[in-house]
Image 1 (cartoon, one colour):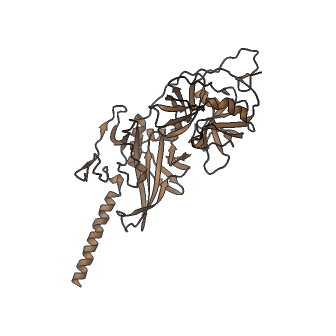
Image 2: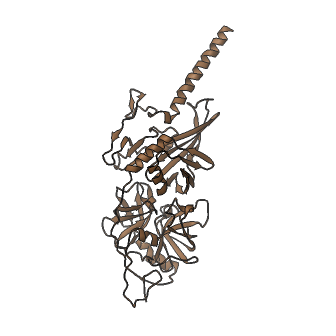
Image 3: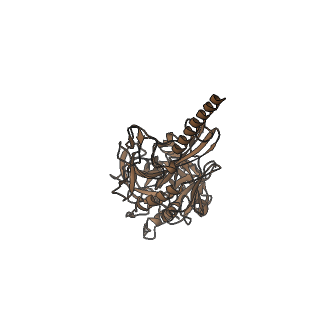
Length: 445
């Protein structure tokens, strides 16, 4: 009897020891260190130690430096400090970004359900996981059996404001208003909703986000852009529009993947901000419809209305597209969307303008509430973003921006008129008696 009691006590002590260990390892907000990797700079003789923070001369932030070439989202236990500002830099091309990681989970014996998020000045990216084989109190030896990238759309709540944001591969561009609210209020509450699950973000993470947003967001000067009325033919067929417009549409490849842009004004390229995220300080590859390639750099980014302007290193031998600068489209107009969905260049889809509406609170995750959005049933898919939405004369009326996930025919473009206003582009002067389209371009005879 006494021997049986001793065995039971020994087993109980071992169980409690394992439970205590696993709880300490599974509580990232209670520790700054990470699980020890012998190849890690924060691992000394197999024992983890507090990561070293250094002064980042570019921003003035105290950061922890890490390599960005390793995929952090392949494991529920990424070897990264949580609730700390990390400077991720690639040893391959020197590209860098700033990020704060957060983790939250709950246990429901024998499973553990968790969420890991990466927050940068531009986007939030996240993965969920399910581990099984867990103990009553902890899960040191659990096996991952489910999870993956966050589905689109994702809801983000900052204070009393809720934003529905659309993305791909678990990555979602953060609304500028949400970033500003965190920046000015480090004690505000932040949470996300993944499917039906509400996930609170740690207070320490939010404070570090506020610090990062104050110093790591670049302020851009508006570039000089000149616009001239161009000759256009009216009521073109889809084939004619494709033939005249596609040579001015380019495919862009950068750190965050690829998208579409188009040549406008004095030879600059217009695209979506989310197409160039992560490449603001690096060269972006530009490919024309003929296959000719060049490189360019970002010269302006609008965090408000999701667009960016690029300058090619050398002038592209393509003409600028005619811009509809004088009027908004009306519901029922025929439109054509041009771009490179899923990397398929020179893709053309046709539809109509379903509605022209203010972004309001329903779409404040994409544009300012006063911005004009063009709703269309012309297909807009990943890779098509940043391409032009043109009318029956081939005049650009908007930039293809996003589609409402799980909805057919609900695609949106930001109005070109609003973009030109934000870029402070002067309306061109036309000497009468030239006949003009409603968009302000010259009617070709």
